[in-house]
Length: 481
Image (tube, rainbow, N blue to C red; front, side):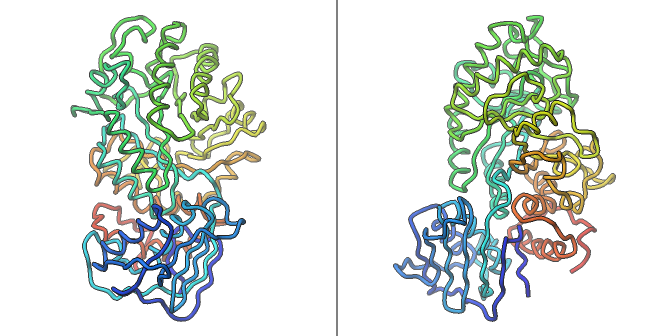
């Protein structure tokens, strides 16, 4: 029987027999997150306390072959032992997630449950198709606290995502404390969609999120969205507004009505100070500067704004990430990544096609394939539908390299915007069952086969049940198993 692994590995051979995990099974490996994670996972669900051993029946090692790359691994399971090899700690961590999925669904239980705990005998060689495999959480439209963000990370980890993009600012709220501009959160963080109280991350909160993501081998990419989506910033500091008049806090869901004062030198002083603080709080290599839906900014002003703003980010030693509209900037700094978000049935904008022809790497997030805030169908209570309903099959059956022909694709990201979401259960409902398929799009070799994917995905619902995830969407597309 083929194991229900998602994302599907690069190469898999199934052998006869199984390895039996028992209370006496020893785990050995380097002192790293992967070893600690596996030991804690086994202890939590089985009640066993895996004894450390220089040998061990489950052995993790950093002696994998060079062709595995940074995230690849080799997993060999026999009746007598489990051997996981990689070149890096990150590769070991990805392999641990595969071993996790080879164990029975009960391994996801937050409390000890009865065994047995067989692992099928397999040989797996695996590495990712794309280096950028991201999930995005919008904490600006509705605020989600540290615990909710950690839970979001936990949902992404089993499926080998490696980027956590946080949309931290928008018209409805500014969510990250900036010490040099305290009103951004003191005032601009007090609103959200509807009548809720808003909220924000203190510097210590954000450091906790960054550390938690790092422990799960995910890089945090903070987004400060500019020059549109800036009502909360201008309500906090009116000199940022073109007219210098204090706008009101905004609690709706319309877009495209706000813009910074792009001609004022003080705007760029402000951005320099904000980027400096954000860069110090997020040690990863990327800073996302937004750039989308600046509908009140003329093309000339937008180009001038980006020309002055992008170097402020690179001066912090960061690689710029921006939504696809930033392709219109006269000159993009070296390494800039553009994030494609429009539906795939729309023509590719000429500036983006031109940037792609020059080798600018693209992160593929087409709304009709990857936007997890789209309704499953017209009857869904949560979500929006401006890009059309997004079912499970539609989110799975697409090729990132076919969206912009000839483009250099850095990877795939699944954004979750929060206009209609207020709880972690709402988040779970929109993630599952679409998130695993997007993970497979990002990790596994092409092409994708829906008929072989469905039974694997159906098996994962047992894992979600065991984990206590109760709000996932019961999609009729999965059929009955």
